[in-house]
Amino acid sequence: MVRSDRAVRVSTRTEAGRAAIEATGAECWVGTPNRLATLRGALENVTVLCWLLANAAGPDDELGALHTSRLEFFLTQAVDTTVRGLLYEARGAGASPPQLLLDGARIARAVAERNSIPARELTSDPDDIQAWVADATAGIESLLGRG
Image (tube, rainbow, N blue to C red; front, side, top):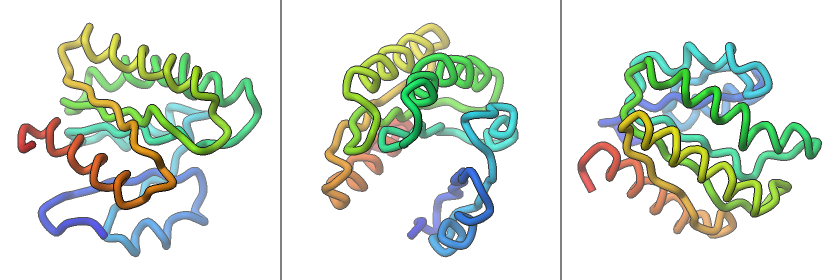
């Protein structure tokens, strides 16, 4: 559930995810990393961008692009928005190989550093949902200067 003092926007690739997202109290945005232009508007008035795609599934070439070229391009576009912090999920339990997530974390750190945007990495085990949520929350709070 979204805390009442936070505005949260969550993206989903299809309308099928809308009800579950809105049930948490978050705003739903339909867009896909396969077409980054569909996500650009999701950054409007966003302070912390969370790239939480470590458990994404798909063909190897799409997963590779998701954590490298698409990530880098999207982050360079985010620089000209209100985004002032980045949380990158660097550990997954899904199809994304660990090395690919390490490459993504390196790219996220480099783009953030080059543009003086604070960045954090989420490295908790996604199978331990309580620890994952606690660490994600701590990372976001830190980026907001509250943790």
